[in-house]
Amino acid sequence: MEERRKTTTGSDQHDHDHQAVPSDLALRVKAIESLLVEKGLVDRAALDAIVDAYETKIGPRNGARVVARAWVDPAYKKRLLTDATAAIAELGYSGGQGEDMIVLENTPKVHNLIVCTLCSCYPWPVLGLPPVWYKSAPYRSRAVIDPRGVLREFGLELSEETEIHVWDSTAELRYMVLPERPAGTQHMSEQELAGLVTRDSMVGVAKVTAAKSGAAP
Amino acid sequence: MNGVHDMGGMHGMGPIRHERNEPVFHEPWEGRVYAMTRVVRAGGGRQNLDNSRHLLELLPPADYLRMTYYERWYARLANQLVANAIVTREELDTGHAAAGSPKAEPRVTAAMVPDMVARRNSARREAAVAPRFKVGQRVRARDINPAGHTRLPRYARGKSGVIVRDHGVFVFPDTNAEFSGEKPQHVYSVRFAARELWGPDAPPRDCVHIDMWDDYLDRA
Figure 1 (tube, one colour):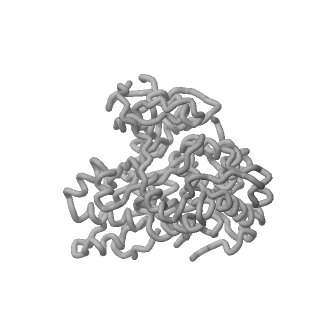
Figure 2: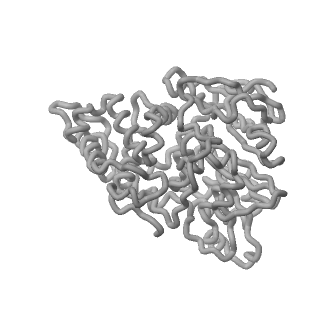
Figure 3: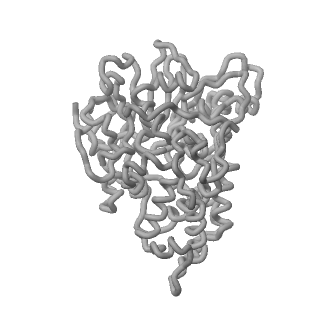
């Protein structure tokens, strides 16, 4: 773990757009929780269950399984590109912020990149909750005006021949990129392929490589 | 509204900080704020997704830029609970429910969570509304500056593009955010050439797709 804030007061060690956390914020959040429990709105166990769902179940491994299936099953890939919501639901993934999905295929000619310049729209059922950088001002401001510069910061230099298609998620459509299957993976099983697919490749800020191990990002 | 949230094309925001093996929540309180927001959103009352987004946009701009993502969510949650009369400012400050304060019904329990997170709450509507445009048509984004909520980003206003997809009929956020009706209408994917948006120095074949409602568009 490169950097992980240890306490709410130690945020100055944390140099993305985390700054100036009021030292009593954790306490204020506790106070709201106590109030909502006391007023009978929610059980603490329900809040635990929501946090657990997004920490352990709803994350980029779901999207990786969708991508791997599309790589090994041409009929599935066709369904995914024509009716992504239904094709993704075939694998059991649906829900909030994935109601109306669109999957965009990366090819040698077209590279797709997803952003939400106005807030932080992101396809939760397949990718989980978005990382800090996706929600941050630097990414939101520059992805549309300088996508090649943004990709370079992620270590991805694309040829001038490749068109970059940026998708700004301004409505209730949620986008996911179908990255290119890397060369030299013909022998791999669907499960092994899923292990190669990173979160970043499904946002469009990275390619999938045969060498990389599958842990997000 | 022409707020700081409308960031597309701005300069000076600094480098992108990519964190390896980033946790879903950096602190326990972030997860609690997220979960409580989901609970409030799943409940009834005077709230919807568009209004929730607008509440974030209404944070003072300096605060918006200074705060972390979940600090904004905390501020919105507190504001929303007070605005919807679920809690009072006094209760927020003391952390205790006022004597005789009413109990909410029904209580959200852990058993309800799987359904809650799996629930589709689509903004798509089956209303028979005719599309004003068709795929392949050239359109121009209206040069409008509404003071309320809008999903028409500033960087696209007045620019021309091509309809590449008709997504169907969806709730219109500009009116829904202020509880003045869903005004369902077609949403399109509109392709704008990078050079149309950013001038002749942009790469010749790059483009940006923006989802736009009928009310954002005119014939070009």
